[in-house]
Length: 93
Image 1 (tube, rainbow, N blue to C red):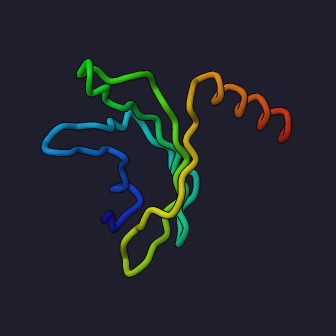
Image 2 (image 1 turned 180 degrees about the vertical axis):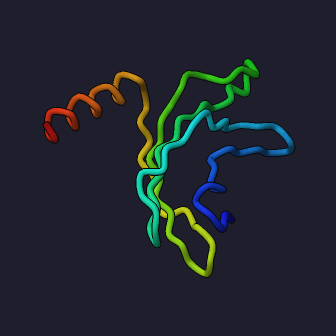
Image 3 (image 1 turned 180 degrees about the horizontal axis):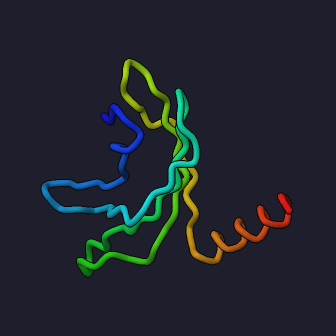
């Protein structure tokens, strides 16, 4: 578990093999509840190559000085990400 927001990652390995590779992250909010937007890739186990970029918004709750994963929303494609960006821009402008 991470004790600071900066330590939180979605890198994930099994048996020494990196299966989820974090490319970048943006901390959207800090505090008892933290929200982070991640850019990442999944390993295709058949080819051994990492697939296309994906995005995930994840929420963490701080409890006993550790951040614990609570929920997520995965953005499945660049197209879906673009639609979300366009919609948010329209709503806030």
